[in-house]
Image (cartoon, rainbow, N blue to C red; front, side, top):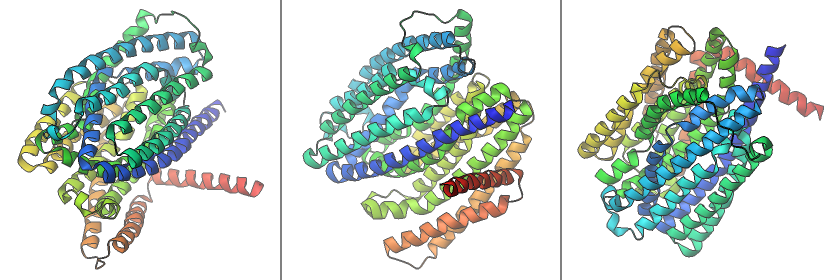
Length: 519
């Protein structure tokens, strides 16, 4: 009975987080498309490239965070489950002190980068007030560390939807005001200042909201975390630090390398594609992220066999969602961008292929990364992100010099294979305490299946006789959405994971039906 109650609680929280996250993502995506469209037509692709570049530079500076947030989240699971308010206050006090040090470090390093902006941006001379623009981005990053550290408590307590709702409101206000400013003044600096002001207000509101839900953390106290607990957190931070390095090397260096070795305009062109990819990724990852705190609860309360059984269903969903969406993106990105902002904003076909493949491989890592974080498995594979980082930077730089834009993403692809091969072994060994052989066998079959479906879709698109851009997009959209999904269902319909998902969908449909008829 108690186990069923825990399961319902975890499922309810996960669904609530997912529902609000999905709604928030949809609203923010529509506004992002509107804002980017106005941005392109008022300021052009050069400033669009600057926007993407500085976002990545400040993302690199987030390395100073050292994975503290993840380690703190892991440390909060147990005291939240046991309602140990004293320990929670101690952890939050420790978190506050740590993030103040992070903010100071980011400020110092961020300011030190300013004299070298002309080196990082290949054609920076044509961009006015580049240092002021960069300083506004730096301000946004530093204030995040000072104001939002408490919100980790909401995430760890399976209340991510509260943060999501606040972020959605702030994003709506930011986008509306920024679009208005662009249409009236066509001024990038005013655009950034408006965003910085509204985002600052939003961070303050998040901080206040957390205090409302957990009033005991607002009480003035100087309670210090015991040295034994600090030692555990430091151990986790050391493990997460190198993982943070790997994430930065993969996700934050592409724009910098492109700007330095290709040109800033290419950064802007790619950002149109990554905007769409990130939207799709946000929709799907919101589902998986909603269950992270629940996974932490599962790891803390269930047997290794039960963890593995639940994880396999979780991983199956990632294979289906990310595989299907990767094929859709591959088929639809170029036609959509052509209709949206014109064929002059396209990048070469090889770059689009690499963007979609990288998206798919990153998606396959999501379940592995989430359960690793939930179980606190950070230090065991500390070397993996270092290898990944070196490979990415070296291959991306060499690739950019030899092949231009597509060479940057060859580096991303090659380096991403490292965690995709190492993480399954770590998860199965330290979380499930069993062999990972079954995962690798399934992984190869799934990748081959997605590849074959993509090849079939490419052959269909090449032979499509329709020339009109809009009609062609509609035809490809219908086929790309239906056919891969149908093939994936047919190929996995006899699996245990498919049967579980089917049962869950039937229960959800019955529940909705009963509520509708009850009214």
